[in-house]
Length: 253
Image 1 (cartoon, rainbow, N blue to C red):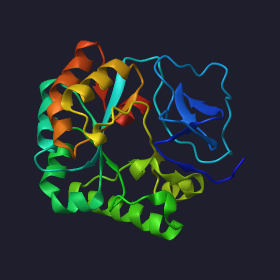
Image 2 (cartoon, rainbow, N blue to C red):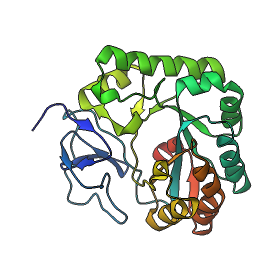
Image 3 (tube, rainbow, N blue to C red):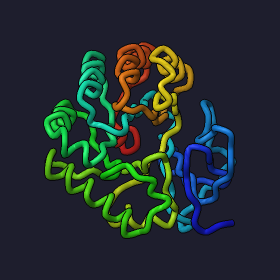
Image 4 (cartoon, rainbow, N blue to C red):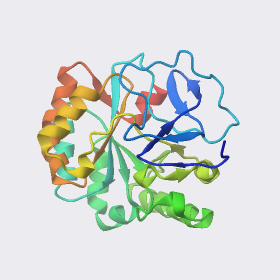
């Protein structure tokens, strides 16, 4: 088993997990898959290894299945013209979300970042320039994390507690760098592939058909199709009886 692996869209966990309140924290050994990334709808922690502590830095894929809460997350913003309609759809449905923001986008659209925060949504770290961190040196990664933290803190007045690596690319040994910034590493359990821009109807169908309690849904407030899908996607989840909450509320209660 390799001691240091890289996580990306084409990989998924092959070994045990560490359970914290039923949340799924895959550990360090990764295997190839055609498109699977995280446990599928209806999966269970039963029978999986209970102790991955000390095996490496765990990555959070989802919350407990013992809930009707779902964390809807948006990456790559803030994006003028896209983030606003997403915020409007969330407000209309009384829903909250977590926005993994790119530092340089926060710098270029500070008022929009502030609007996300003032609306009660959670803001998280998505690096400063959105590089492939798994191919970078520790010092380069440290700078990406720190610059994003400082930009969000200086602009919005809060310090993020969650981090999502761009493209899902992150070496397990780099976990020490996120720990130093007091950041938890978050991946996702549902990917409607809105980044491929398959159409708003397809994005909505994938989200509504593939999500259940405890899921962390990956979307991007970067593409117009995601903004167009947001109203039906969010309303559909609420009508199915799910409560859309921030990542911290899903995981920490």
